[in-house]
Length: 609
Image 1 (cartoon, rainbow, N blue to C red):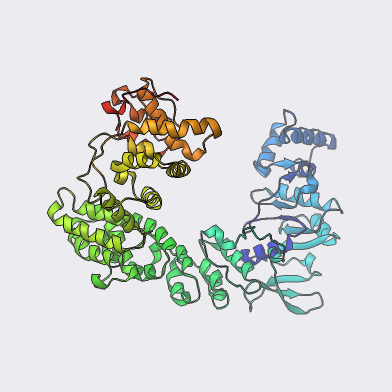
Image 2: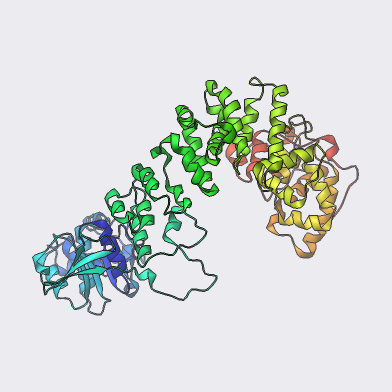
């Protein structure tokens, strides 16, 4: 059986409760360590002219060396031949535990030695052996006559196996069907059943691993699959990502998922047009944008779920930044006022990458893209908002024209669901303007969705308010947020949120230290604090150090976190690699050499724990 796909499926079916010695390519399995006693057979082939006594001496030295039991010098020629035939293979003395041996990377002498080893004991499990054309006749005769042979895999017909029943690819039926030719001349269809599908008792909480999990596919519900479908899908997965067009075409009518997985990248778009009504849209994650007509991207984005659009966004960003012409080919020719979900998503990608697009497109971004984006803004819209702000930033626009634009985006954000990016930003704007407070759920979303520099100006105030109440302190301890990076900033640092540039950071309030000590120290001594409290502890200890006039201790979230509360003039010299060894938010502040120290950060009264 020369074709790799039926061969791998046959191996997977036949391996149960057997000893397999074969090339495991296409099989989702790793070979066991090789049997140490196989070296006894290998030495005969490696040194046929040596005396038996000399071979025994050399193989014993070789056994000792490869088993690492002793440091023994081996003959140089023996060692060179061993490394040529066995490479970096590992060996074991526990030969009864061996169930599957991989022949990939082994020399002919090693393969022959393993087969001779398997044939030397009649008590071994049923054997599945890969038989090459150039094996010696005596080995072929031993294989044919062995009472415990389950399956011999041949690349092509061999006369010595003429008396055996034969399995071969069925020219009429797709896998998992094979054709069985019996010794009596009968030809029968045979369907392979994956042993993995044997019904087993599964605990209710035990997760079921599906073959498409390795491709990054997440489906909300397990589809009902025909008998044998999972086996075919496993075969398709083994062909991904290169694919096999002929095989995929054969599978398409009955096994659309398998056909989609096994599609070569260049034929995936036309196959989707045929299969889109039969596949969940999550499968679009396998679509390669390099093989998609970019003018149809909005059509695909219309169908794709948010999880797939997140993946597409990463790929689209790379394409737009590599080739500016991509933007011209991608922009849909649609009315922005009635932009579909897919067209709005494309508009968001263009805005998100505005700094990388040619200047002649900027006016179109501020007109078509902006309007199309806001007609149906995607859930992930932070980068698009940043792109709009960049287009109106110094040298490219003016505050007068930007103000109605940002107000329009804020109004749209207020209309969106609570978990939408623009709604989260709009609520932050409301809070900065003093119109509304943020509850704990809104604060958590703000800190997790928006960049720290957007909410840093109100971080000291938020932290003080939260530390004043026992319940909100419990929430603070359980929800780690980058408090050092947010609170320890220079007085007057500009707010980085679009539309809020006029707001500045007030600096770290000296009251924070006393509140942290009151809430954390006693609790830490009584019952300990969870790992999630690390950002609060780091902030407390950073403020302790500056108040006590000493260098800071290493932090939990970043070894250098405490230096953010110290004057820059006292900072030690550190490399970029050292600065990056820890929390990314703190690393950014360290690389900027931006300290949160100011004179009022030191409390007027000394507080002891």
